[in-house]
Length: 77
Image 1 (cartoon, helix red, strand yellow):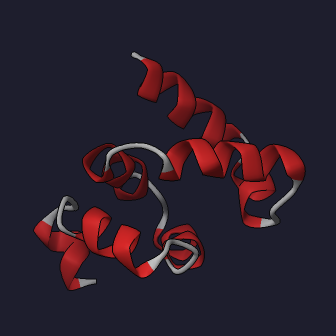
Image 2: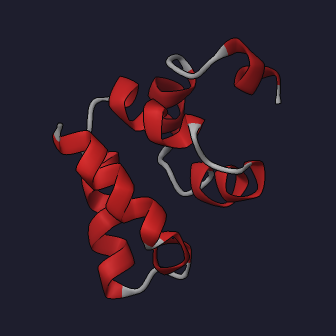
């Protein structure tokens, strides 16, 4: 599955994404271009500290879309 490959690459290069390196920005753009339910799968698997850093980088519209698809446990956080 394409998302699995993308998520694997993203997790391997998570620091590059957080630091907004060219490679990280390219991966980030691929993630945010996904349907919110698919992006939510990525966010669901992040450590909470990484989730905090990356979730706020989404637009408000993207945050709402992703938030609607994450688990109830994560919504409480």
